[in-house]
Image (cartoon, rainbow, N blue to C red; front, side):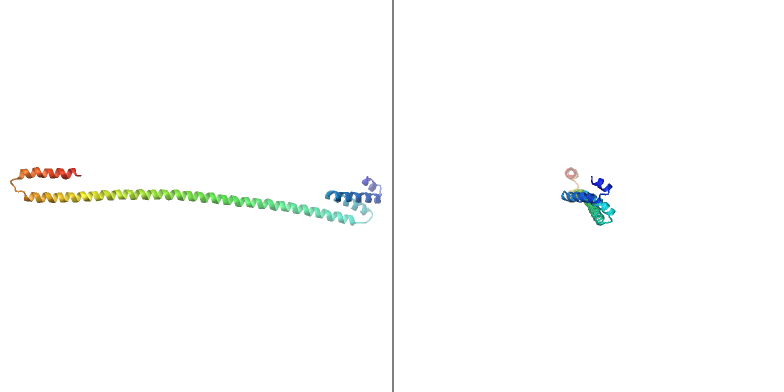
Length: 178
C-alpha cells in the first residue's frame, strides 16, 4: 500500500507509512527492515528534493557493512589462530615423539654396551684364572722336577731299578695332577 502511494505521488502518505514501519522495525530490532525503510524514505524525499533519509540509509548500510566486515575479519583471525595453534601442537608432539624415540634408543644402546663390557670383563677374569692355574701348575712341575733331580743325584747307581720304579710313580703322580 505504501508503494502504491509512492507510485501515485502521494508522498506525504508514503512518508507517514514508511516512518511508522521504521519505528516498528526499530522496536523489533530488525536492522535490514530499518535499512529498507530508510531507503524508501530517501527515495520518497528524493522526489521532494530532500536527502536526510538517504544519508541515514547510507550511514546505516555502511555501519552494517562495517560490522559484517569486522565479523568476517574476527572469524578469519580466529580460524588462522586455531590453525597456528594446531601447527604448534603438531610440532611439539613430533618433537616429543623424536625425543622419546631418541631416549629409548640411547637406553637400549647403553644397555647393549654395558652387557658387552660386562661379558668382556667376565671373559678376562676367566682367562686370568686359567693363567694363574697354569702358573701354579708350572711351579708345581718345577718343584717336582727339582725333587726328582735331587733324588736322582742321591741314589746310588746300584739301585737303578728301584730308582726307575720310584721315578715312574713320581711322573704318574705329577701327570695325574694335570
